[in-house]
Amino acid sequence: MIEMKGVQKTYRNGVTALQGIDINIEQGEFVYVVGPSGAGKSTFIKLMYREEKPTQGSVLINGHDISEVKEKLIPQLRRGIGVVFQDFKLLPSLTVYENIAFALEVIEDSPKKIRRKVMDVLDLVQLKNKARFKPDELSGGEQQRVSIARAIVNNPKVMIADEPTGNLDPETSWQIMKIFEEVNARGTTVVMATHSKDIVNTLKKRVIAIEYGRVVRDEQRGDYGYEA
Image (cartoon, rainbow, N blue to C red; front, side, top):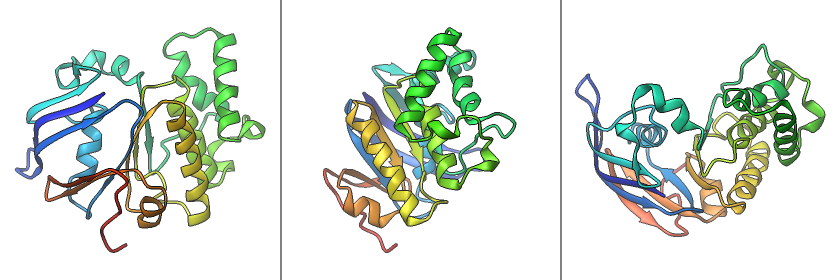
């Protein structure tokens, strides 16, 4: 499903964020990416949705090397990848419904299909009653649920999350994790960078630990392994 072969990433300032990365993630897996700040986790995540390109090596999704995709085709590539960010990245002038529908309007779905799909994902994240609200009228947890709904409305095969609970209180974080588990249970591969020791140690999944740009641990049902 997702494969990295001999991946190295060196930025223009000479900093090498990743080196010697060889990873396979199968369809339907749920994977935590952990490690100290500055270890290379965000770079690892960004390579999967072509926000960054490797300096060496290849990043394959469903057998296609996405590092070779032309710039103009990146939006098409991302239709099959849902991305959730720590800071939500919602469009402030649009309603909850419109923020989610926007992802479908880009691919020219019919208004009838758009309405059905948007209401289906709003039901999943339990926000049907907030469809006409603007982002600034929602709590942080509600905004993150909208972000998740937007990420999954195209029914992507892969969902990538970069510190999705980082700005949320513990109770809200657990609510968000229930949604991620439900998305994963429906067959979507989930890859999540996180600093949450409690989440990783309680909801046992595969753990990939990165330190100094290298994978130092890759365990099924692993622990966080660092002091929180």
